[in-house]
Amino acid sequence: MSEQHLLHEVDCNIAIIRINKPKVLNALSLPLMADLATLLEQYDADDSINVILLSGNERAWAAGADIGDMATASSDEMRRRNQFAIWEQIKAIKKPIVAAVSGFALGGGCELMMHCDIIIASENALFGQPEINLGIIPGAGGTQRFTRAVGKATAMDVVLSGRFLSAKEALSYGLVSRVVPKEHWFEEALSVAKQVATKGPIALRAAKASVLNAQEMPLSKALSEERALFYDLFDTNDQTEGMNAFSEKRKPNFTGT
Ligand code: DAK
Image (cartoon, rainbow, N blue to C red; front, top):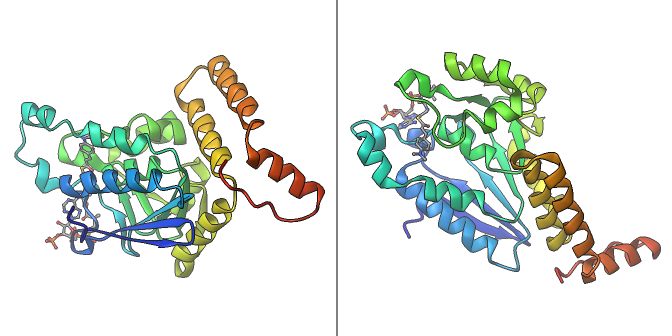
């Protein structure tokens, strides 16, 4: 795997991945996306990792898919590439992914961000689905996840005009979880990842799956899935440990069992 376009390291039980193509504002090339999906799967399967932190750099989280990869492609060629398989791999990651977003989060970059679970945005971040400017529409969920996040009125405004949302707007519409001062965007996201990483891995995976069900399922089905996950957790050591620790007024030591 060529990993220069992705830097990654481990801090305790947090995997930190940084998209690293600053000259093109972290444009998401096909090889980069394939490597990112593989890397996420590796950390998802690694028992020593509890949370994944995905980041860009100060100027760009990612300014979209690499336009050069698509400029001369025909409809048949786009179909043959089957790029959606890579996005499905990312969607299937079970561990929480915290996004540390500064600068541009556009097009496929915004869609990648919406595959993350907690989105910490710098006050300088800009969001959009400007594919309309290129004569196409969002292809990796941008018309769907974006609309579910911000509502139809704002989604139409953004998707049809190609305009960017400020971090303040994105927070008010519910696209991001928190907006933080630009000097501390990465540290704030890392701090959130660290807080989440203290929780029990089994409960974290169940909580992520259950919240995501709210986007995919009718309410009655999602409620019964939630109930099943809730019951299952009472067969885990982490549930016993969590409740004992509360009674004993100490911090829990979750083992993921
Ligand atoms: N692709 C390739 N290169 C890009 C890029 C991109 N998306 N965005 C920026 N760059 C490059 C620029 O070409 C420039 O390169 P040089 O000219 O220096 O060689 C460099 O990054 C710096 O950009 P600018 O000079 O333009 O910087 P500015 O500050 O003036 O402007 C900008 C920043 C973000 C407003 C501007 O660069 C811009 O408008 N970029 C394009 C944004 C965009 O249209 N994004 C949507 C792309 S389409 C799919 C899934 C997903 C997708 C498609 C298929 N499947 C599953 C099938 C997604 C599609 C998209 O994202």
